[in-house]
Length: 134
Image (cartoon, rainbow, N blue to C red; front, side, top):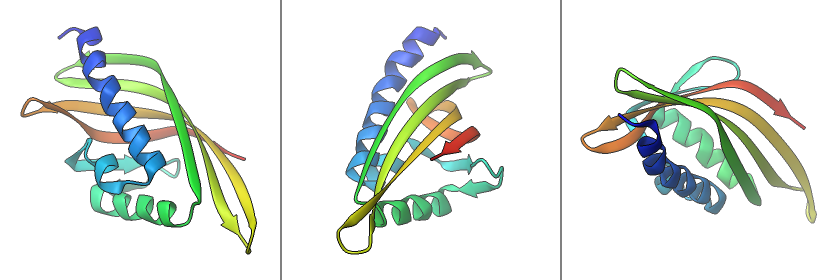
């Protein structure tokens, strides 16, 4: 399968997920993930979809605003799996005390594993391979 064709389908899915993340819309955000999705953060502990959604919902509740952007570093297609390495930057504004806020920036490199499931591209797994917070 042509990688450029896959990327042309996956790019709008990334945009949809990024916008849903910024809108703090967990259902739309999670719609790109397969039922068997697994997340491995920088601590390398695997988290299933249900727990990942709970973690993200907690982040949404405890933040005032979120901005996120990404770009693709590299990609490949092998044995029906599209794999891409993505650099992401997220800025999270959290409330602090009454009127103050705290800004946290998180930069990551993430490896996405996509698979075409019944004609629809879904994320099977995300692995965070590098993470910096400041």
